[in-house]
Image 1 (cartoon, rainbow, N blue to C red):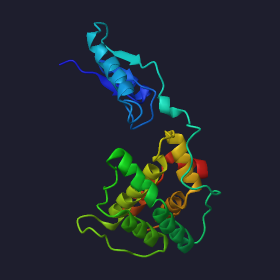
Image 2 (image 1 turned 135 degrees about the vertical axis):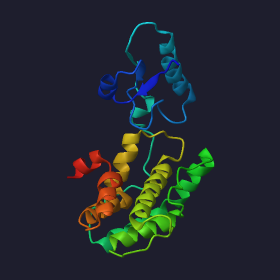
Image 3 (image 1 turned 90 degrees about the vertical axis):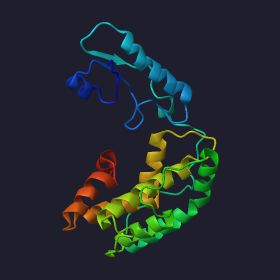
Length: 231
């Protein structure tokens, strides 16, 4: 059976040496390019399938010729709210800011759902306000039980954090503008109470004696590039 791989990390593909692979210069998680752009995604798929027609080899690694058109910032995009970067502070202060911000973004997120008809929220199985309360409780040092008995408290905290990130980024992307992922990431991690809260939760969890909590916090709370950027 003829196979074709889509490669996002070229050195890894060079080491594994598949029969055919198309390397694409897109960020992780977007192997076919930007979301909501079926014409561009079709080009990527067809470029990959054309490798099946190639008779050379035994290893073929072809580079896709175009960058992600959404990698460039959209100057028409505006942040949901405009204020200076949110600094850290006592856990109670950050917790209150987080809970207030999640409520502030509700209208924008409702707009996202009306536009797209879907959301990526739902990993935790909780309402977004419940996710915020769970994260805020962690900031306050509260030993909260898991709201779902089939999942441990550390795992539920991870799921709640993932839903909070999705909620904020979807809310920020609502509207006609098409912000780049870098625009959204810079806003979330540098200028929101939610981003500051996740940094604080990660720091607190890494100081815990719970090895599962430390593992989850170290690997899933904050992207490695953002941890390096903030020290």
